Length: 376
Image 1: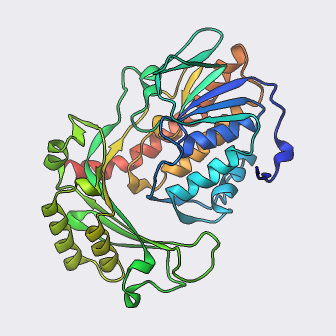
Image 2: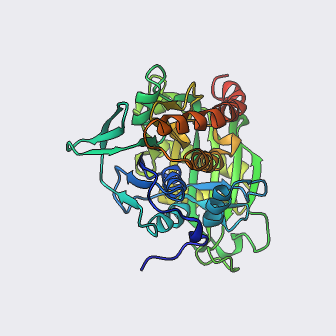
Image 3: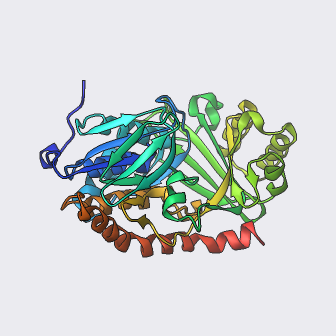
C-alpha cells in the first residue's frame, strides 16, 4: 500500500514534460521527487538491484535556512527537520518510499546505462540491452564515476584521488561490552585527534523512532589515513589518479587490520576503542579513497548533473548530502515553467547559473586539507 506524502496537494498533474534520471542514489531519488512535484513524468534508472547495501553515516542539516518549499519538503522526509547523523540506508529507504508513492515516477533497478545523448527535441539514455529511454531532459545522478558526466564534461570526465582514504566502521551497539556502550543523552558526534594529523569521528546513530536505549542503535567510527597510497594502487582501488573502488572488509590484508588495531589501542578512548576493535574483528570496515571534483560546468544542452555526478567534495566539508538536496531544490525551481521544447535547455541553463559557483566554492573549501594531508 502506497503511503500518502505530506503536502501532496501541491503536486502538479503530469502535463509539463518528462525527465530521465540516471542513478537512484540519494541525489537521484531527491531529483526524481523534486521533478515530479513540478508536474514532470520521471523515469529513474539504477544499475544496482533493489536490495543494494549501504552503511555509511551522513550528516544531515536541519534546514533552518531552507527557503524553498521543495528543500523543506525533502528535508522533512529524511530528518523531520532536525540536524542528525543518519545511515545511508535509512535515508535511501525514506526517499525510496516517497518516490514509490508517486504515480508519475517509474523507478527501475538492474538497468545499466551505456550511453547518453541528445538532439534538439529530446535527451535519451541507452542501456546495455539496447533499450532507449527518451525524455525532454536527462539528469545524471550516477555518482563520482558518472557516465553522464562524460557527455556533459568530456574534457574533465573523472573525479581525482585526493591522496588519502577514510576508514568507516559501523557496528550494532548491542555487540559491544555492556560497560563500554555510550549512554543516552550524550553528543551524537565526537571528534578526536586522528592518526598522522587526520581526524577521528565517533558517532552514535540513533533509533529511527527516537526512543532511548541501545537496541538498533549503531556506533560509527570514521578516521582518516594518508599512509595507504601504495597499497590502494597495488590492490587496484586507485589507478593513476582515478578511484575505481573502495577497500571492502574481506579484502583488507591481515597486517593492515593488525596495524589499525594497534593504533586504536594507542589513541581511541572508550566507547570508540571497543567499537573499532569489534569492527576490525568482524571486518565490518571499509576503506574509502577520497575523491574530489570541481566542475567547470553542470549542464550541456538538455542534460545536467546533480550530486556527486556534478561535484565531489572532501568529507571534511560535511556538505555532500546537503548540497545534493539543494541541487534538487534548485532543479525543481528551474523546471516549474515546463521543459518541453526550448524550455528544457533554458531550465537547465538557469539551474547551472544558480548552482555552479556555489558548488565550486563548496568543493574548493575542502581542497586545502587534501593538499596538505593527502599530498604533503
